[in-house]
Amino acid sequence: MTLEALIFMIFIFAVCVGGFAYALYLSYKNK
Amino acid sequence: MQNKEYFTSRWGIIFAGIGMAVGTGNIWRFPRIVSQNGGGAFIIAWLLFLFLWSIPLLIIEISIGKKTRLGVIGSFGKMMGKNFAWMGTFVAFVTTSIMFYYSVVTGWCIKYFLATIFQGLIKKNPSEFWYTFTSSWEPVIFHLAAIGIGAFIILSGVVKGIERANKILIPSLFFLLILACLRALTLPSAFQGLNFLFSPNLARLGDYEVWLNALSQSAWSTGAGWGLILTYAVYSHKKENPLLISTTIGFGNNVASLLAAAAVIPTVFSYFSTQAFSHQKVLEVMKADNQGLTFIWIPNLFSKVPSGSLFLALFFLALSFAAFSSLISMIELDTRILMDAGLSRRKAVLIVGAVAFLLGLPSAFSMNFFNNQDWVWGLGLIMSGFFFTVVVLKFGPKNFRLRMISVPGSSIKLGKWFDILPCILLPLQFIAMLGWWFWQSYSQDPHNWFNILFPFSVGTVLFQWLIALGLFIILNKSINKKIFVENNDS
Image 1 (tube, each protein chain N blue to C red):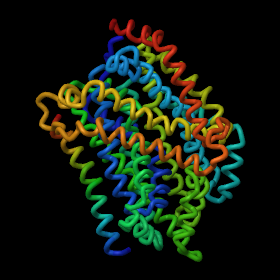
Image 2 (cartoon, rainbow over the protein chains, first blue to last red):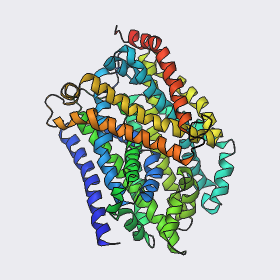
Image 3 (cartoon, one colour):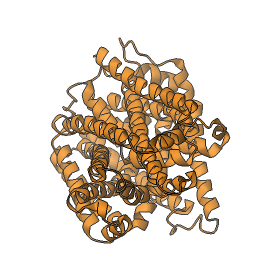
Image 4 (spheres, rainbow over the protein chains, first blue to last red):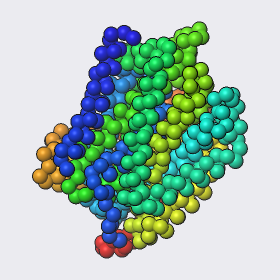
């Protein structure tokens, strides 16, 4: 796996999983 | 009829919403489309359209459902005026037509899960097994089972049925996807698959087809504009924030798609690593249609994997869970409409279940009919999305945002940027998507593009749409009468 692909994969997962986790956190916080 | 059912908490609508969005399209369509469209470049465009098409439409739907507390037809009647309730009838009909064959698909998934465990599917010739299965009576039996289980869940009500089922199905689905992903990544040469999937390949961003495929995938996969989340929003509490719920659903849907791709694509690469390997061969596999990839290639791929039978069973179990969580939202959409018209939940579910079984039969028997319906009503969803945009334009985007989306007292509010979406960006995306799919149909077969008997023609789409629209406009007055008299709204 190239470094370029690895960085891109981490970026995409960070955006999607991070966005999902943050939205879930806000849902919990704003009960 | 007053609605007395509500989700017990915000998690109820969030799980139900993710269940509605995550379906077979995430697992069998996304890995295929991302492979054909340059991997990383496609992912960038697909992520962008989550914010430009899917999340805005989810926000619009939730806001409408929360405000009107009526199903799709009643909502359009209330928001647009009764003379335009036919737009809601069309939206409901498009999703219902999809439900007819989606139940058949759910049946296939159950069959393949059971066949993996009890019939040793992994040792059989996948093509032969698929053709024998689809040309027998079995798809009808599994279609009946799928619609029966789905109807039973909806019959149990919002809390004991929809909420409870999704609270089990969705965490299990994510667990199974993570498991499948971990298994795939431990296969030889799996990282070549990840390399293929995540190479940015930015040059492909100059290809308009990558953008249009990404937009179509986001539109179809998130369930935005289908009227499904509108129906669930009817049962949400007043304080719920449409922006927060939509964003959670949208990101949840995309995570599920990425996990599915990270499980399927490395498995394909690993399979070919033992043979004369080339990217071309991988692309050939991924060019198979949805059914071809899932029901023929996937069993083939897992047959070469250690403990393949176990992981094949888990794959089809995940697919069944994804299909069920979406199917029940489609059954609920129609049930809600019939309940608005004064029927009890029990009667409504029985009618929806019986009609769905009967009208799903042609798709269970004929793949040609199935493919035609998938083409006609899949494009119909783009029209549905546009109808929701028209509601916002009629209401006034600023007015809609301030009065229907931003909840008083909420710390999360939608900015002015939202106003530009229904005015410019959503209509533009609608025109681009529909125009491009019609153009593709024309360019693939210029002689048959307007032949209404040809399964993938523009003619068959327009013919079926116009019949439906004409009928709903004629029947508009009587449908309105039933819904609005029942809801004491003159």
